View 1: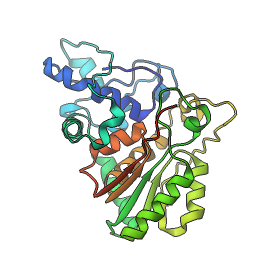
View 2 (view 1 turned 180 degrees about the vertical axis):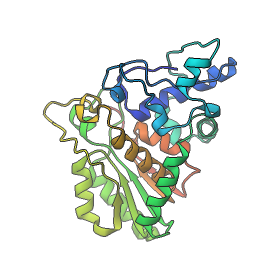
View 3 (view 1 turned 90 degrees about the vertical axis):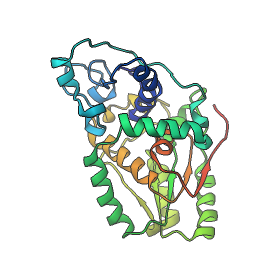
View 4 (view 1 turned 60 degrees about the vertical axis):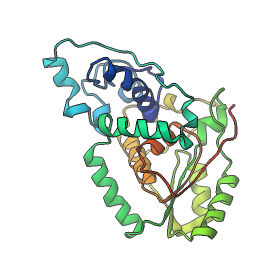
Length: 274
């Protein structure tokens, strides 16, 4: 299974998950191929011989792409299409589709066990064993600068801060955990909430140019950057284990809700689209 090249990690995941059910029904075993076409993970150069997907996620039934290519018979290639029968950014309160894609993701596209183990170790260090954690997922950077047509409008930092305070008054969280690729948003939240706010940060500083208004996939600092995306996967996993969640509507949010076992309380921002 291949996908359009101009995607980030969880955009790929959404595309693959959306068409996987039809492929299974047709009697095929889906194997994810993020290697043989230009994309952000190979720097738009297909000369590398390593499937970036397998750094982060398991293949169905323990297969590896290289072994399938070498030993497989009756191999067919599918370019993924939107297999969803609903608008994907309405999934957050849709119990039927959440359950359906939760099962599909768990069985066919699970996060690698090594990453889950590392995530749990990080959680213990950050939260000191507490499970009373409010998760926050928000987006800025290219969404705020470029206002991409048809994409969900993210909340302002003021909206997010106010909702964190309001929910904290009700539930007195031990910690907050935030995931964002936007350095400005992260720093403002750190200044606002201090030691109580926990986060993971890549060694890579995006140094996003707001005047150019380019999508993040055009940022060459992300080309072949496995460490940056690994931290993103770990952050989404940690958010999925928080007791409550505040979230913008993003690709990461879709996967966050799909892989979670549900939240006690959730605040998802429906602010329209650009």
